[in-house]
Length: 126
Image (cartoon, rainbow, N blue to C red; front, side, top):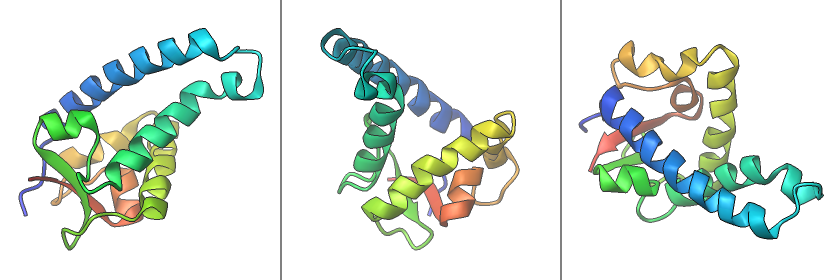
């Protein structure tokens, strides 16, 4: 397995954030922000986007697919939806420690971020 570099992962994130920003802006036009769904729209959209795409047969978000990388378990298999959802939620831990969890790919042999380590996942070149 060839593990995806920090730079490629970061570029995939930029692409995904652009897509999510447009999608959320469109949804915000039709869902009132003062509703329960509206107040949690950003979180719900990001959670569903990452969990569903990374557990799909493509094994990655649109940004990852564009750059030829995928999320898998350490054996190279597709993540299940529950595991992908836990990985997505674990990204909050990476953020809570001043974003340091996202820097770990620079320091680990398999280029794993904190959320990857917690869910036994890797990001690889396809």
